[in-house]
Image (tube, rainbow, N blue to C red; front, side, top):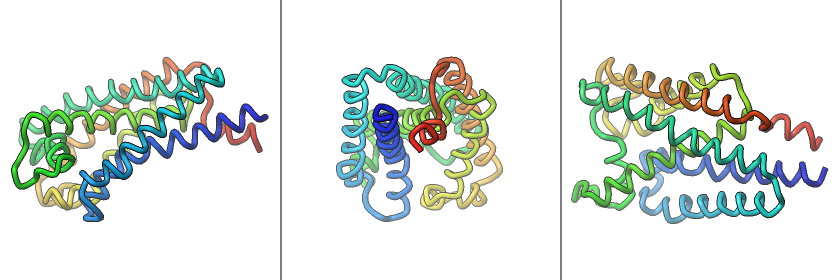
Amino acid sequence: MKSSRLQLILVLFALAAAATSPNLFVAAQAGYDKLSHLAVVFLIPSIILLAIVIIIAIARGYKNLNRQIAIGLLGGILATLGLEVVREIGFRLGGMPGEMPQLMGVLMLDRFAMGPNWLSNLVGWAYHFWNGASFGLIYSLLLGRPPSWSGPVFGILIGVGLMISPVVVAMGVGIFGSQFGIGFPITVILAHIAFGLILGNFVAGKNRSAESLWTRLKSVL
């Protein structure tokens, strides 16, 4: 029971750490604070927190939990590659107003007035892929070994969340891209379906002995 309770606590901390990164961009676009400042106050500590969770899980011998974390992170990175292929095609065809990772990098290094450079692009892409890894971790820890079809559903939910968030308003495209054109929602949804397909199949194939959050909760109640 003590082991199950500690693992549940570690999972909750890992979920909190993973949820931090994607929400910072939304908070910055909503005008709460600069992304550069939010990264120092919240992003870096959240990464440190996740590292601590992994270290404790290794020290306690929770191999399945660490594997579940690693699969989620790796699955999210691979899924982001798939998302980027679709997003880049949509961008080239006029379905997107700009390169979002480039915007992220400019905001992260607080050089909006100066524009992007190689370092801001590197930081922006790193942040973008970390967000993808974070979503992969959330998916893995929440659902354990879910059916592969749940991946596209998860991806669509992320895409819809993006299109109703302050991000699209700040980009000047409006909710669901209403001020930009039909290409925007099509690109976003297709890109996130690709994300979900890759993530769902990867996690379903690798998380053979993983527990969902609900299963962990039931084991300690």
